[in-house]
Image (cartoon, rainbow, N blue to C red; front, top):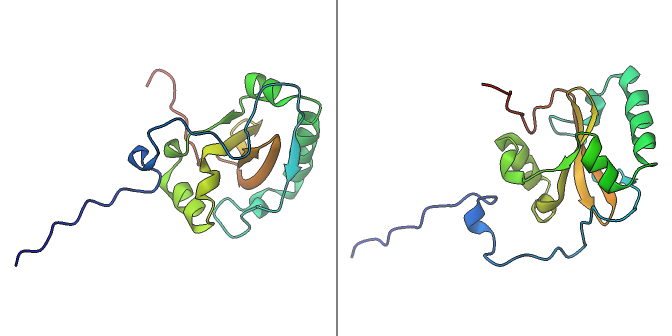
Length: 151
């Protein structure tokens, strides 16, 4: 008796694995209104390639000062004027997607956000209900490489 062909395995973050209908988040992600950011550190990835320990001692002060500065802004202001933005998880590098799976955070993937600190430096996390759950320190802008203009 011939074997049944196995269906081709589709990666977890592939668009074919997403529901066809519009999805309502369980906990709203809203960039509207005047909600100011709140930081949460309990989801930090301390063992991965973008561990916050890679932040130079002198840089920690600047990162904390930048976060304090963000607290005076609404999420709408942060996303419209600082180079920070919500990111589609399919656009990040494979190593970062695999790390999200390893951390069992796939359900948070639709809320992935990049906060621009200075130059190439980014803080990555999940934005849920106005709370930014810090995940990674990306000093070289590796997680979501930008395409250079005119190339």
